[in-house]
Length: 634
Ligand SMILES: [Zn+2]
Image 1: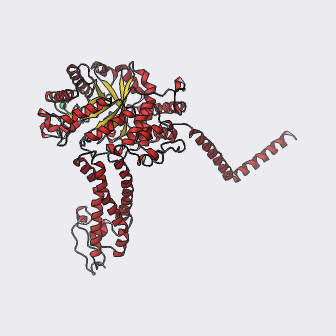
Image 2 (image 1 turned 180 degrees about the vertical axis):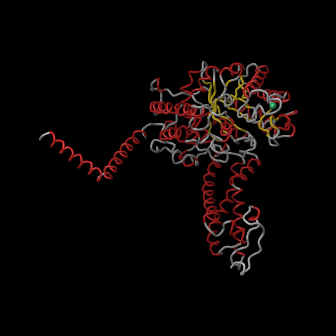
Image 3 (image 1 turned 90 degrees about the horizontal axis):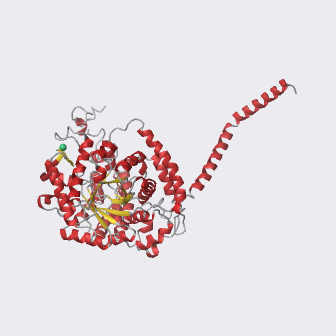
């Protein structure tokens, strides 16, 4: 063949190929999709082999996808933070990319965990100190309950307690109005401290000395110390009386706690700073640091062996030079807190780089409850475990930055988001979460080798699960609250924990019922109720499930009361029921009355129905209209 015929042959083949391609484009596309799917499946099978399970795959995903913030506390903090400088958002993303790769690698290498024979590099990081935070805010557990709780904390590797007394401390003298009516007595506090000592748990007391002083500043006695008159959130640091007030708090706390190694002086989330006439002229960072310096200096003078600790969030955006100017690194140790899963996202490499210059030691804080919603009643263990495991990884990575390393981790357990908030997850509903997370921080990992320990410690007997669910031995993907695993065990508070499982089922029925009667179906909406206009037959039909759900709700009251009787006083039990169960009972009673009234109607007006007076207020009509006569409606 000559060159021309070659060309024409090639051209005709090319034409045929292109045409076939066009004709078979959809077939090829389908083929391509199948191959892609196959590759993804193989990929998935390989990755499911990575231990510490699929949980961690989710963690990784959440680092990119989740824009959700760790707590409303934190949201406020972010809102109050300065606008990020250009590029900082990109930097964050970049940091995350690096973390992503590092995490995948380290997770692979951490796999199932080190026993005696494991190699040096596989040794998991275990924080020297592992504390459980007990937040007493407005709901004091009975001392007899703490008597059962502390040995459990010790058994699962806890070395100490961060005790946040707030209004549950028996404040005296001019501070006495700050003590709640149901605060602990001095004798009870001493008993609690003795119980901690008996279980080898070091106590670190926590008092708020800047922001979050609502429990004091809400009172008329201390309102003059506010930075902003309308808000009891923060103290004015430039007012001498504020310092006298703080010194009194420190004196009373140290007096009863004795010679403590550490005193946590709070200082997180100071939402009002530099707003009053005394503070207005000063820079916010100077106000913050000089106040911390003053309080810490007082603590050290009063008790030379006591090291003050502060929450770190107010320091994250401060320059190194400013922190050094106030000698903050010599006066306090920072406790870096993040309760969301993706810890590096909130405390980036750049922050660690600053902290390593300023401080020789650092603490960290994760959470086992009270971080994913103010009105939750059972902690999501899956999310908390991700948070704790990611902290361990971060601590392992960053430990060498500090000459003295990390001192320890506090696994926090918030009882309320602030002094004014309702109760979130209370202790008896959170014991499985506390234990799982404490055990993870004590060992540096969480996997099936710890299962018998968990089952024994929580007294699960024959009910302890031993199954492995696709590498997720706690089955957290299907049971994030651990109800299946631990509701038949006998840990302190188990009865209440089990009842919540039932309550959750009833609550789901209740929500479906409300959605149907008040929103989705058309015979009991507020319009029907307002105009007393509905079909009795349909009302009966909608009310079919009412009695069953209402009775189920009522039947929960007594068992809940009994299950909490040994744990909280009557005020806390009543508060919990009023917040969690009573609103549903009240709503069901309201709906019952509405159904009754709707059915009491035996005859109905012709349309149009009389217009609602409220329509005048919102501007739909100019004035109240008379019920139209048949003539007017034509
Ligand atoms: Zn001020």
